[in-house]
Length: 460
Image 1: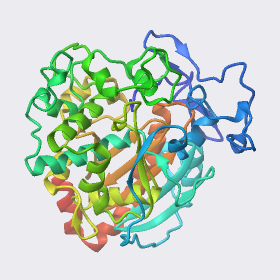
Image 2: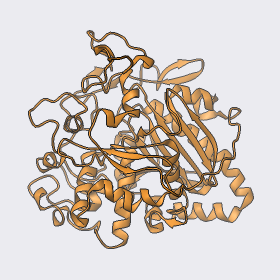
Image 3: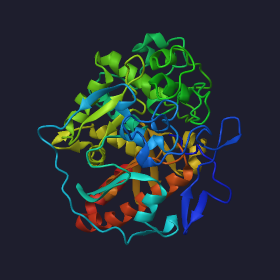
């Protein structure tokens, strides 16, 4: 997900409706031309409730590679990925579920000054939310579902999947199975002639590979859309689509220096998955299960999309329930410990909290959306007064927000009209910051030393 992927609509970050900024849909493509996400003129309008409805489903209601990333079909796809795309199971309801206790709080009275004084409900509506949960000190204080979602529904994480993959890597690094300072070709020699031929594993984790690659979701010629065609979720352009993302990586061309600039490239995490598979002899779905997911005491089934060759969509294909996403976030909030187990090494979480290369990030367009930000181990890291927060972010509004100092986790699934919209992100981030500030006061009163310790770790 690119934070700076979209240009605000005329007059600001988006249209104003009843005092609330509504996410802009218009954007600028790679060639500087304005485009707008539209359905093709030959596609009749379909209501959300009519998508994939009927016996049989009529042509205009079907979700196909031609319609997956068009409204209103995208929302259905987000909740039914395996019915359209090849997938592999990662986990199902376990015998021992890690209980997330419930301590409901009425948040309707919270107004967010950074979002024009909007309420929680107004912001959830403005950002096209499918599901939303807030966890404070290990208890669910707020949980809501919209647009056909339920507590059991698996929803696509999109690029929050990258953060999960990096945590798998963190476990392997802690055991010495892979080395972030090692050359990628030490594990995957087939990449010797590609952009990855002289890059390090660390460059994958921090998005600092010098590569010729576009993450423009609206440019049909972009490399990120080639990935989608290899997964089978966009119409194929060549006979080898759907096909192998690994084969695609071997043809990537170098551009620029490794380790210098922050350049967000989804393909990097597919390559990270390939590195981990070669180092362990185990496929990515099983690695996710054994290294992270199986330790969480997950409540519902989870799975991951595959490409046409059967390799995992490591960069964005993971799907789970909202509560299980929150369980993952709670492990991160507690220095990697949850359900009586060390899910992710504490040292790995500490490394994320320290942040990445701030100078490189400051040179990128994303700094305009996330000032004082950085990117480390596939997490977006933000500095705020008294706290360091980190996030997993995905297109169309997927979000995992973690504030250890406040003991707050926010999990959010959405289906926004645009893949990337800075206006929507600003609203979501403002909401999460307001929730962390409000709920964090309780943690500070209960144990001031705990908050101070967490804040020090984040600023170290």
